Amino acid sequence: MLIDLNEVEGDPVEGVADYCICGAGVAGIVLALELAKHSNVILLEAGGTYLSGDSQDIYKGEIVGRPYFDLALTRLRYFGGSSNHWGGYCRPLDAHDFVPKSYVDFSGWPIRREHLDPYVERAREILDIAGERGVTSSPYDAAEAAIERAGSLQPFAFWWSTPTRFGSKYEGAIRSNPNLTCVLNANVVDIGLVDDHDAVDFLEVRNYAGRSSRVRAKAFIVAAGGIENPRLLLNCNKQIPEGIGNGAGLVGRFFTEHPHHFVGAFLLEDRVKAQLEANWVGARAATRFFAPTVALMEREQILNFGLRVIPSQTTFMRGFRSRLKDLVCSADWIASAAGSLRGEEVNCFDGALRIESESTPNPNSLIRLGSETDRFGMRRVVLDWQLSAIDIHTIRTAAVRFGEAFAQSGAGRVRVEEWILSDDADLPSRGNDEVGGNHHMCTTRMGTTPRDGVVDSDQRVFGIDNLYLAGSSVFATGGHANPTFTIVQMTLRLADHLRA
Ligand SMILES: Cc1cc2nc3c(=O)[nH]c(=O)nc-3n(C[C@H](O)[C@H](O)[C@H](O)COP(=O)(O)OP(=O)(O)OC[C@H]3O[C@@H](n4cnc5c(N)ncnc54)[C@H](O)[C@@H]3O)c2cc1C
Image (tube, rainbow, N blue to C red; front, side):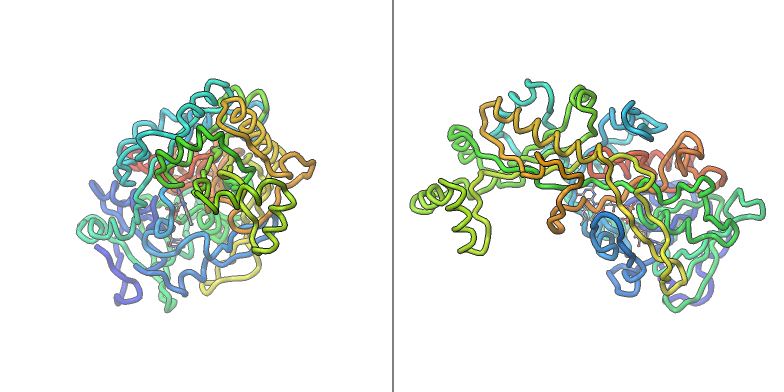
C-alpha cells in the first residue's frame, strides 16, 4: 500500500508493526520488500513520488574542509532516493577490502566478503544487471594481458545496472503488497527511546504541514542515506544529549568518498590505434579498468583504486583534420597557441586516465551538526571531508605505475599530470569532474566494539536492542567500487538476520 501523509486524515499507521523503516531509497525499498514477504512493515519516506523543493531543501548543508558537491544536489530526497539519478556502475567490493592493513589505522571489517557472496545473484537481479560489458573483442586485449603479466595491476570489469530507478521499478510491488504500508511525505524527525534508553519506542514523523504522528514497531531500521543516517542520530538528542549511538563520539566520523581525478593522458602506438578503430564500440564500452594487486598495495603501502583508461574518438580523425592535428600537436607551444586561439585546450592525446580511489578511514573526516535548522527544527549538516597523506600517495603511485606498465606493454605512452610528480601536499581541485562519486560512506561504520564502530556486524546500533542502520553509512571502509551493489548485498543479509 502507498499512502501520502499530506493527504490522509488522522493517524494512518496506528498499532505496532513488526518493522518500521525510515527512508525509501535503495536500501529501504529492498529491505521493505524482503521483510514484507513474512511480516508487517511500515516504510516511511520523507518525499513524494517526484522531486519537490520542500523536501530537497532539507538536504541543504554547509561544506568546510575539502571542496564537495552541493549537499542538496548530491542526493535526492524522494521515493527511490538517489537511485533516481545514479549512474548504474556496479561491482562488489574486493575480498582484500575487508581485511585489515598493517599500515592503515581503522582498516578492516568485522565481516569478510564471504558473508556477502551469497547475495551476489539476488543483488544482480534487483539491480537489473544482465551480464558483463557488451564488448566481444577488446582493442586493448594484448595490452591488457601484458599489463597484467607485469604483475602490479590487474584488469577488472564493471557490471552495468540499467540503471534501476527503485521508485518506478518497485512502486507497483509496494502498492500491491498487503503486508507493506509505504507512507510518503513522512519525515522522521525524532527517535523516541524507552526509559532505559536501550530500545526504540517510536519514530516521530511529520508531514509538510507540520502534523505529526508516532509509529511503533518491534524493530526499527534507519536507511536515510550516508549523510542523513548520522544527521538523524545526532539530532535525536532529547534523551541522550550526545545523540543516539554516539557514546564514543563516532557518529558522523570517518566520512569517506572515492576521490575522482584525471591523472594523465596517453598516446597509442599506431598498431593499437588501428585495432581500436577497427573494433570501435564507443568510448564508454572501450574504456578499460585497472586495479592494484595486493602485492603492489603492500609494497607501496597504498590503498585500492580503479584506474580508467578512456579512449577519445578524436583519435580517428582523417585527411586534412588529421594532418592539421599532427601539425598543431607537433610542439607544445603550437598546441598551446592553438588552444588560446580556440579558447579551449587542444587534445593531442588518444585518451585520458582517470582514477577513482579508496581513501583511508579518517576520524577527522566527518559530518557534524551546524547551527542552522531546517523547517522541522533539525540542525543541518556540516561536511568536513578530509584526505590523508596515504590517499594522495595512492593516487600518485597509481598514475606512475600504470604509466610504466603501459609503456612496457608496448601499447603506448602515458604523460602524467604535472601535479602527480610535484611535492604538493594536496590534490588540485579543478571543478566538479574532480571531486568524488557522490558516494557517502562509513559515517556510522560497522565495528567489532562500540569503540571502533557505531553498529555491530549485524548493523545493529551498539547499545540499542532494536535499532538497525542500512546503507553505505555502515561500511567500515570504502574500497574503490561504487557502493550501491554492496548496499544491496548488505541489505539482503540484514533482512535474513532480522527474519532469523
Ligand atoms: C549523480 C549520482 C550518480 C551515482 N552513480 C552511482 C553509480 O554509478 N554506482 C553506484 O554504485 N552508486 C552511484 N551513486 C550512489 C547511489 O545513488 C547511492 O549509493 C544509493 O542511492 C544509496 O542508497 P540509500 O538507500 O542508502 O540512500 P538514498 O538513495 O539516498 O535513499 C535514502 C532515502 O531516505 C529518504 N529520507 C532521508 N531522510 C529521511 C527522513 N528523515 N525521514 C524519512 N525518509 C528520509 C530519502 O528521501 C531517500 O528516499 C550515485 C549517486 C549520485 C548522486
